[in-house]
Structure formats: C-alpha cells, structure tokens
Length: 126
Image 1: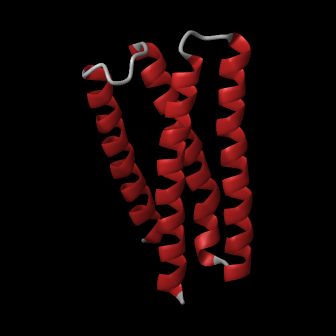
Image 2: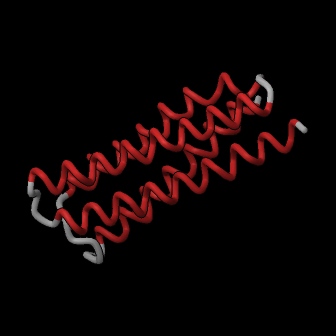
C-alpha cells in the first residue's frame, strides 16, 4: 500500500511541477525550446521513477536497510542530475546555464518530495 501512495504522490508532484514549468515557458519567463523543456523534465522524472523502483523493496525491510538504500538512492540521483548538467556544459547547448539551473531546481523539488514521502512512510511503520 505504501508503494502505491508513494508513486501516486510522486506522479501528482510531477504533474504539478510540469504544469508550473509549462506555464513559465508559455509566459516566456523561461526561454528555451520545447524540445529541451520536455527532454530534461522527462529525464528528471525518469530518474525519480527508477529510484522509486529501487526503494520500494526496502519498505518491508528493517529501518537500517531502508536508510542505507535511501542514502544510496539519493547519492545516485544527485550524481545522475549533476552528470546531465555537466553534459550540457560539455556539449555547449545554447542556454545551458538556464537549462541547468531549471533542471537542478526541478531535481531539488523532486528530491524534497521524495525525502518527505520516504521519511513519512518510515515513521508510519514505527
């Protein structure tokens, strides 16, 4: 049951963040292409979706194992997001700074939501 709530909340968060990003792009507050917008928001969501698949088996384990998986998951996700930003700088995409800033902003929103959901789920078990 916890895994369904986790994925549902993560999906709702993804839709809200995507909607906010879409409105910022539509009003020209963020000024880069639709292709990059969809690509990088999709990649960030994919990082957290795969992370969710990694952490769900830990819901039924002891708290120590859950904590270890959570730390490994967070580290892997941060490494993935920062690798994407480094690739942007290496390939020299126009507006790489703006895209990188937005990518890290979206990443931090997802990381915060994920952390709150996982800690809340761990507390509910105790």
